[in-house]
Length: 421
Image (cartoon, rainbow, N blue to C red):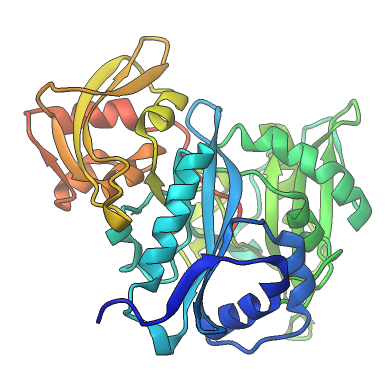
């Protein structure tokens, strides 16, 4: 259909935030609420919020958030977090998303952000822009009677203590604790101050009615905060007694002892018959801590989570570490929005014995061929090269290259993002 006539795509100014918010609500098929505005203003990043205007009417929205992304090995990388993407139903299929995406990715490259990330509402949209699913999301629900609770001794022998915290205490201790945790988990992203303000009710998020969570903080023997568990309790009664569900909203710790102690606490709260974890790492050992691991039932939301696009191949692959020495040459096709092709070309990814590595352009024969979406899927090491090859998303050009690439690229710690953005 082509580009809609008279539709201007540009960054917005602070006095246009309310109109942007109304359009975003329309795009997500929900009603605007005046209470949205303080949150929008608090999270506004000048130059990073875009809109499509048909005359003076906002018909498309797009924003990006500056993140630090933890990559395999514990280094952090500047990342472009894309969110709030809508096009009003009257203006679909007119190229507006492509125009906003092209502007944003060009800006991300100029800012030195080596990757772009997003949570797609629909699976089929973002592959054409060079994004690929890189992180899984999902949770599990555990019946305490069926699971038998945690095995004897798990989380019970530590020398620390657990206290319930006020919202002020969470705002004081949470950010520093999370910053220590996030560098231990590839896929984790930084949290801005407004994230904690929303979590603790200091400012309301759009579309949410705040219910104050319980926050359990774990401290070690020296008094240092080493773990956090945030939860709500869903009230229910059955057969004349309590049948409550403890719903975990947030959980992280800097060591295994603290993590296990917090799980033991969760399974021991009075009146609780189920523990439901909304978002948990794919390799989290929690199910194996139970007397009956079969009682950990995956939630219905399990599936693909964060999608990733590599914007700067040398910077991205040079920042992460690898499981051992090796070399693989990748032929990457990346048409990109507006023909940008940031990852297009032939790249030699090479790692030394100490796990450090680099990626540089090469004229050597390619071992594997893929598009930019597959490259994004493989970057954090959570997706198997043989799996993508079996699905026809990676093509082996030299015998044995699929297995060699998988050994090189896979992460020993599964990438996981604790946050939705």
